[in-house]
Length: 179
Image (cartoon, rainbow, N blue to C red; front, side):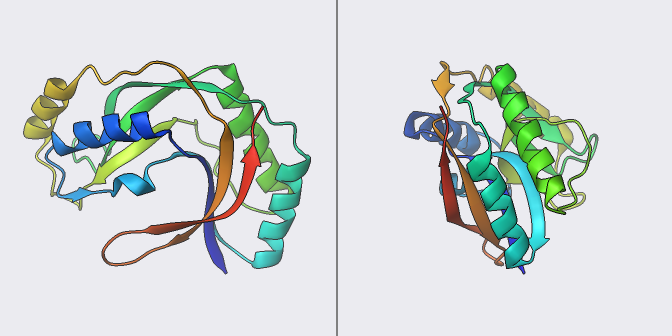
C-alpha cells in the first residue's frame, strides 16, 4: 500500500514568500518548506495497481495549466485551530483540473470525499488544544496581506507520502506537464 496524493508544486519565489510568512507565525509544528504544495486530490493508502491505473488516467487526461496566486492566510479547525494555511486563488482551470483529477481517482476505485475544494498550502499544524487562537489571529493579521503576482502551474506531481515522527517525506512518483 502506498499513501499518495496529487499536487501542484510551487515555484521558488512563492516558496520563499511562504517561508517568510511561516516564520512570523506562532507555529509549534511548522512544515518544512520543501513539503509545500497545493493538493489537488488526497488518495490515502492505495494498492500499487490502483495507483498505476490512476497514473494512466492522468496521462490520458487533457490538462490545462491554471493561473494561481497567494491570497491571504486562513486556518482549519474553528475555535481550536489544527492548521494554518496560505489561501490560493486560482482561475477556473484550477477547479476544472481538481474536478478532473478527483473524477479520475473515483473511476479507478479510489474513494475521494465530495467536500468543497479549498486550494491552500499548509504552513503548520497544531495538536488538539495547542493553538492560542487570539495570539494566532494577531500574528496572522500582522503577516497580512500575504499576496503574490500570478504564476502559471506548469506541472502536477503524484507524490508518495511517508509519515515520520519528524514530519512527512514526499517523494515524486510521476510528473504531468500542464499546458
